[in-house]
Length: 164
Image 1 (cartoon, rainbow, N blue to C red):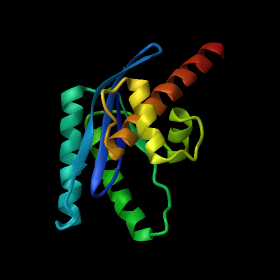
Image 2: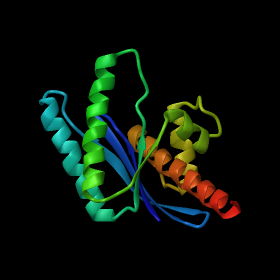
Image 3: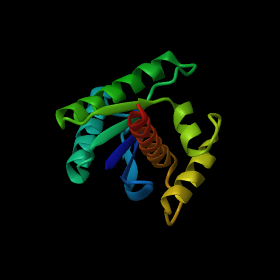
């Protein structure tokens, strides 16, 4: 199974692509979709949509795992983040990809073992779990962590279905 993990952002949207076969995870690609805060929000959202669509077309994932919105202090930032998530979801739906959403706490729990992990811990654990040659940039590491979280969640759901 190929999983595309996304850490949405209006300035940098991280992405991470992994392949999962049984218990083994393999890194395929990761990076950031960067937009300029100097251009209109609609243009930034279009850029995110276009880039996510191209990543989907290039790697052919079977699922898109997306980090859910957390309510920060700034409601405007949360709204803009919601718009970015919408652009990502439309790209996934146009490619007929199922979308699975995970909270930041769930992602941290799955990758580090506790829900209060620091960004640096996520970066180090994604490097270790995927045998990366170097630490991924922060947003890409977060996206890889979302993909890893989905792989673990999917495996658990599959095992539970087998026992029912």
